[in-house]
Image (cartoon, rainbow, N blue to C red; front, side):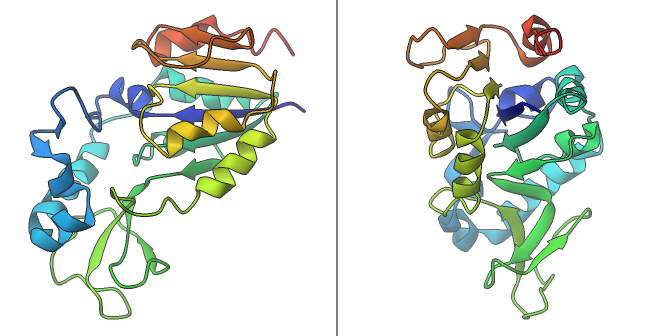
Length: 226
């Protein structure tokens, strides 16, 4: 069974109505990114940070997976599929995909601010005074700017073993996640679906489809080529 590794970014979730992580003015829903997605912002104003992610968590209840999410689930019928996502939503899970690596954390989880290994499922609002079992304040289970990406090595290993790399909804500008494309074995096919300009080497095995996620997956022939 061939193995497809899929790297997904904000573009695939945007079609379900989820706000993208960053746009041209460097703001995220009118918030400076460093105020809500960095250890500095957490220390400066933890209540602002908690409120911001509480809003994101509530939004998950109002959105649903789209056709691109379900397409990736269908691929599991004939391929080994590993999804590496930069997104913190749970849309891949809700579409039914079974092997998902969240590089940047998950909205529906929280952790101790003191011990990163104390992680809890969390669907309600998170407030100051909500404590982990070590009596430390709980914080969003999100990898903020300036923090290590814990599953990056695992993700790189998966890409190295892929027969096909599929990149959806990311312009490959956010590092270190963007570096994963360089781990695919030389000559293995790479498909990149994104309506925006993507800066990648011009090589025969790299195909760029300048469309959004739901339209772009329609141009893949992964089912007919098995």
